Length: 202
Image (cartoon, rainbow, N blue to C red):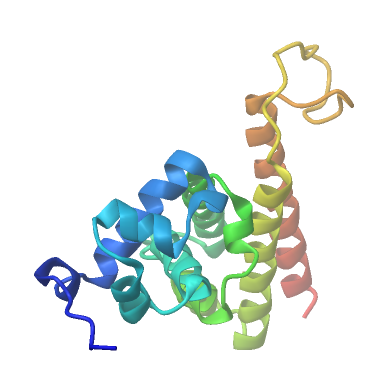
């Protein structure tokens, strides 16, 4: 059998083009719609050059996750204390991961990708006097809390029927989108308060 001759468009195919096509498919049809074949079809090429450029499907999913986590961290503001920055950082992470619309993508992300995303937060904590061990632990807790919250927040928001006196999230029938935002803020706030308390006791 002769050696396959690739078209010029296949030879010039970049990993960035492949990831961009995969992200489009993810937004349109969800994670289950993403495959090497569907990406190749979107790009107008056959699957072999996609495999050659990106690897297997697991590598493709890793690349998509890295796309959403790239340049995640907002710039720290001048003299911004780490708890304030952590609140902005977790909100930004939540927004980015929510854009992916499928939390399964981030439950298998390799550790180095999250480490890169947490570097600015880690540096902010270290600048404010937190030990490296404590800062790494705090970053891990905040990351897990954010990813876990998004993984659980997958049902459509309930119709707005909340009584003014009712706590956000206390209705067993569901929560509104406003309540979800309140719950996330409280969730991260409780965690930051606990980290600050532990640091004060050292």
